[in-house]
Image (cartoon, rainbow, N blue to C red):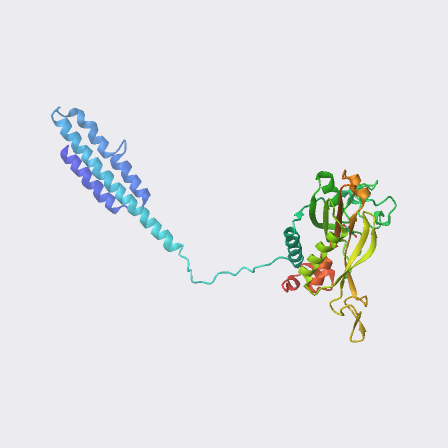
Length: 347
Ligand code: DAH
């Protein structure tokens, strides 16, 4: 029996030395140490030994098992390391090969200007709000004091969703004034940028979809002076300290009094002429219309549950494309929406 054990040990050691793969090692483990393996077979004969011999043989058998197990583990580790080595060699990367360069984009010029305007207003304490583009006629028109029959409500100007003309694509961001005033108490100080839609043919200055930025400030003692301060600050920041503005009386149903703000043409400096020719930038006007504004109409305040005796406020609405075109010197609105990278790369 002693010889049998010695033989098993020797055979096992030799076989293990030769084995290279985890599969071969597993096969050897079963062959020598498994339930039906060589060592187990020897142990089964223990019963035939004398009581004195048994513990001696038992110890010897355990020692052989331990040695085989140790060798098995050692060879397993070696096989694993070799496999890893082979895998790494096979998958070697040449890190010196130049990578594929990814073209880095940038914000769309429209978003760049929008971001600047938002930053400016946030700096003045305005909160940015967002609202639905599919709007109720009630909010887009009625609550803004725009009566039935007003030309802007016409089906030829506005995209309606239903036959009774109650749901539409908003034609302006002004309904956000109502949405905010119905849900918040003064002081209110918000800026609402977003898409608006009108039935316009696309040309150099028109698009059926464009962007507006609405502003609204409501508190006690708000005056037209506050409106002027906010807008002049914005324009000087956007177009430079030398920018010259004028406020001109106008009419909007939801403000009283109402005005439009123009900027002096930067090309002809208000003269309307360049080298004896009509200025092409302002078409000889000397001024460029930028936005509509005014003091929120008492009827509008009242309709939203705000007491016009106690509170007053101003509102303004500007076209983002117009502001961006002035700033980036883009002369055709359609370029902004074409998404031609050759055009966009210039900004
Ligand atoms: N919503 C107007 C438009 O689309 C612009 C406007 C004018 C907005 C006066 C205002 C305002 O908030 O007070 O023509």
